[in-house]
Image (cartoon, rainbow, N blue to C red):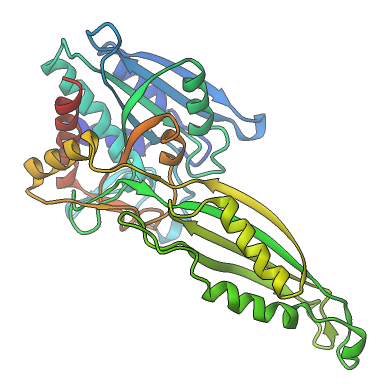
Length: 383
């Protein structure tokens, strides 16, 4: 059994449903300390939702640390769902028909194991490496993300820690290992909209004001609005309504209020302030009385064809013979926090098809190539 597969299985065996780390970070820290890393554990958050974070760094031989490459990821996993629907226990790693099954196999304990073993092999081969290697691991990525990577990045910035490159181990591959790298992510801006009306008996509409009827033209306008055209890295900003509710449940009452939950996934062509202002202008033009509670989960970030993307593409090509695609599709990740203090941030990991699903899995034969890609990236940037 390879060292990477063995460590992946050990991590899957840790019951680490967010925000619980389940001992994963201790396993990782012990391995890293054995090869010369300085490690630090930071516990944060309220007592009812405590988050564990690991910072580790092995400095290079150059006086100023040289270039710093950060491996970032999370040990927490989403809940299992109905256990009876799993073919095997989600926290007892199982290999069947060439696949390794277990919660977190794809998202993202295989990547974490590959990070660690890649660093071990690199340090043995390059004991006098010039650049530095760092790890930032949290147990709060699948949860609210209030006490994990975001506060660790603030802490690193306060201490003046420089980061030049970051690889986030999210599962990004689509059909084959290495066919996609995420070199950016769209921003996410959500809103809870309340449109006010006047409740009344449905037989006497002149005594009421139906917020659903009032909102209908505005909703159509919002759906049809082109917010921006996107650019070479991002598709155009999208507006989507996720939930809509009004009424008392009775069929003879005009509702007094309409509640709408919506979300913008926005490109670097739009700013949150612009989107808020335009949406509110559309509502005002429709003549509706409204309130909005806004929530910004993250701004967009982009890493172009810089040293990191090129190094990772070269590593993928030499290991898999695949020409990878750069993409910004999908949801948000902790890369949005790291991008504030690190110029070049990309995400790369195993196939994403089973993430968060029942019988989550990775292809066993992809595990060693993934580790090799991470090691080859280190060799190009910090050796």
